[in-house]
Length: 514
Image (cartoon, rainbow, N blue to C red; front, side):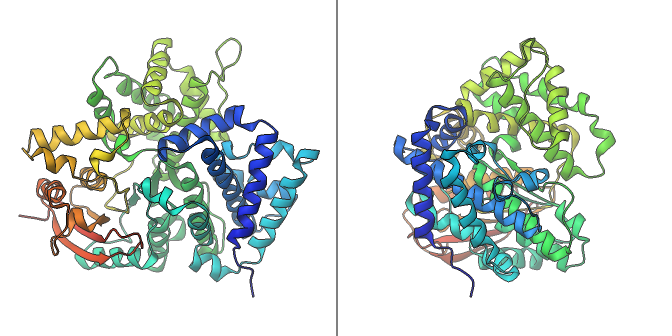
């Protein structure tokens, strides 16, 4: 019998990491400060001690993820090498800010970390192939470690596999041809939709490498990116009996910014309307995109990583003394080379404008948001990503409960402009509408002209078969369906997440309505 995950024991290891971080003053060092600010942007109202605890949970999860992929790919070597992700660095699984402990191993302070590493490796090695493929140990561990109320307050609801399978079944019944279509999950979480998409494509006869390159994910939580990438890599390896070529196309970013591109910046007004267009043109002209269209998924991943790394280095002044070189943090040499090339192509004025835009959006979290906006405009120019199917379980938050920051205000202004202004929805319908409806709107905007969208939504915002207290919010959802002339169905699921908020699924074809 394999060993259970042992959440209580894992929490003890997390507490050990908290103690080490406090003793070594990690909280005043750049990796923690950067990541803390990201967590503060995702999870509202956390105290300093809560943030350190969550940072330590993410650190322990990263060790577990690195160990699982390393063992599944049959990597061998020093335990710290496996736990840190050095053995699998070409796949971009590790979030560098969660590797603050790596240089401590071998020192007195690192003895406890090595013990944690060895214990996690032992747990991972006890898992068999079916447990890894069918039970999703990464997702279950995350849900066991991160407080449920904290996740729900941020709109995180990880989707049961049967719901994912149901959405794909209904989409295929409607005529969606999964084997042929690129798939996007714009709020991918731990990768449930992406993994099932990969498995179904392979089972339908798609060559495994082609299937792997035909699924793309996006999420604002950096640990979610690590989880989703890990699951795709391991699933591919087990099903294809070989390792994949390169990192999967799962990006740390914001779908609102990606789908709107430079229009997102225009929502804010101000003096930066042309900055995104200039930046996208710089990337397009310096990267020789037309020569590399043979594998768009890998090209998108490399380009996005290069832009993200460049913005981190630019904002945090990680430059050489003469300013001609930038420190690009990618483990992969190709994005690092592209990062340097992009930086050298920027005028001083454009660099200053980019820094201003990051400041507007809140430093650490502003970097993936701005990267997404730049990539969205680049995708609009080049047509590199044109998904025929979008599937997701987006964050659930009422629009009037969105954070009062630049991102939250941009979302509210977008909805008011698009639906209260031009389509004359009453104000209460906007206020009581849900962020998930905004994801629905932008997914229908982003999917190919006659493409398909499958989405988990709050039943109170979408399903008309029963009375709810959120009737006004439904008006926004149904106005979105009318705008994009959707055909399809809404199916009531009930309280599938066990938190008292009932769910439904929307299975839609864009442009299929009257």
